[in-house]
Image (cartoon, rainbow, N blue to C red):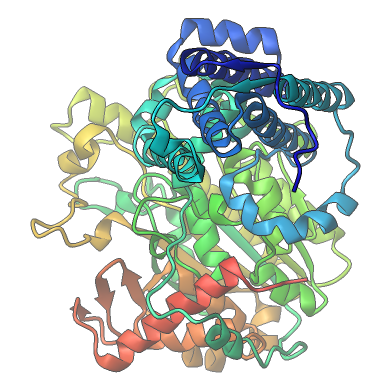
Length: 622
């Protein structure tokens, strides 16, 4: 076929071609950064203070340009292709941040077929100036390629397609190697100063889209379980039903860092000054079940516990590397919200923190919550120090219950007792009751006294909700537990001085004491009557210690919904066989521990992992 373009009038030598590639890569990088939603001038100012970011953003653009130039045998044609592709991604990132407060990740390529429906769901304002600039620059580069070519490579063997393919492959190989080494480095990524390290869109904006995008090729990974079959997993997704359960409102409250470490022998508390009087009293109520949940993280990872309880999947099983369960979610998922919602319940999530933290604003929509309430939506929130109080959060729960026109499923994550437990946590001059423990270091005394103050307020919240729902004629089940143990100083300082062992064993086995938080599951008199409490509680077979991922399924079974979802039904069966699964540590139904499962038990765990992977990656949930 005849070339429609005339032969270029000028051809650049190899050195000039390489120089052109460097200059063009720099220009494309600047245009890519200009397409971001933040201030371009402010971004460049930050780069001048941290010049390594200039290299980290330009390098992937330059390597892509070399690959395209080698393949097309023209540095300007290659630059046009890379400019269009990279800037289009940057504009997509801008649009996604503006409409969903979330940047573009590499994993989004797996969701291209869902883009159409997403475009229909949002009022999108496309950045016309940026789009026009990208189109014009691309057209200019194509025009330059028509009139300015590149001289053949000096080595004859590399002048044909073999050389072009070799240059293309080598450039991509170098880029791939950098992505899995330099760009994958968490230490390097976290070493740069950003305006808000917890807010992922802000990190993308401050570090530059090309660098941040390349870094996230190796984050939020979900490993494909051995032996996974998509067709096989689809066969398990049969038998969903609705309407089997009893109409009792379910209020689930996960309290920040709530624990019963004050029950440790080192604390000299009596009935008169017990920080947990309501928890201890509620445990003795005839309509209560209590014990401990084994959560996925120690001293952090609140959202991972939310994910485990609500979905029945396990954060620690998603990837061999550390991952954030919420950041691994990018599609509609089955959850407690959907089971209750399908039975006509009103469903809501409440958290007196920012909606972007852990990407909760998007994730709870994907979980199926009809309503989500965050700090920006709350009227006159009450603070104790920098965090919203548990008492104010109890107000919100009671208000939601009173406004509900149908049975309510309500899930709350509190925030008041969030770290750090420093003397100024509740403001200067705040006086904390001493622990009464002799021999503590000054640092440990501060950590513990500040933390216990938050525990008192958390227990007071439990007592308030207990009293409130006990007075209601409508049937209500209240579930209350902690998301993780508190951080009490470097090298487990507070725990060591208390004599509480939360360190892993010498052989590397998990010490479950590091992951146990208290739970209590209680029904008011009306709910106890509706559920036939004594028989329902006995049939539940809920042990003293259970993995957090089984807690939600147990609540469904208690309310008569154990067979509505094949997934949650399976979880209840698995819980009866292996109530605790924590990495390679398993607790059996008789309370004994093992690291060697029987063949049948191993098959159950494998099915759990494969089924969860199918739900997270493939299942279409309307």
